[in-house]
Image (cartoon, rainbow, N blue to C red; front, top):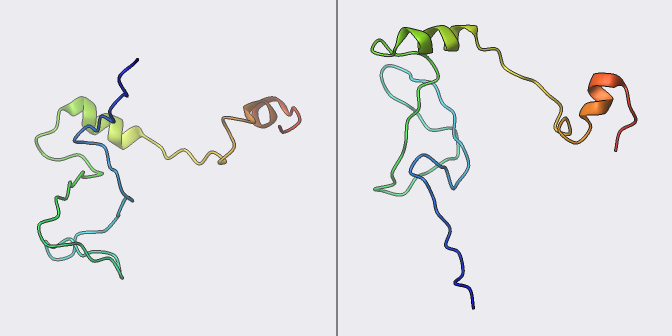
Amino acid sequence: MRPTPQKAYLPCMSTTAKLVSKVKNGVLPLPRGVKLAEGTNVALIPLVALPGDPPFLKLALKLAKPRRFPRDFALNHGHYVKGHRKK
């Protein structure tokens, strides 16, 4: 009999929805309608290079472009790349 595998969560993995907000006057306001319980752990990941970051990371963030692929791109990449029929 095999033991049942346990779910392993990394500290950087989000188990809930992602929230996006902009800093205003040094404060990070929550989106309208969002309430967090007292003592909730929150991780902040800046989407821009910080002053102490290595030059390579600063250049990569500067050159990176958002990818706006369709939701079914992985399934129908032949359609989008070569014009094949969609699956």
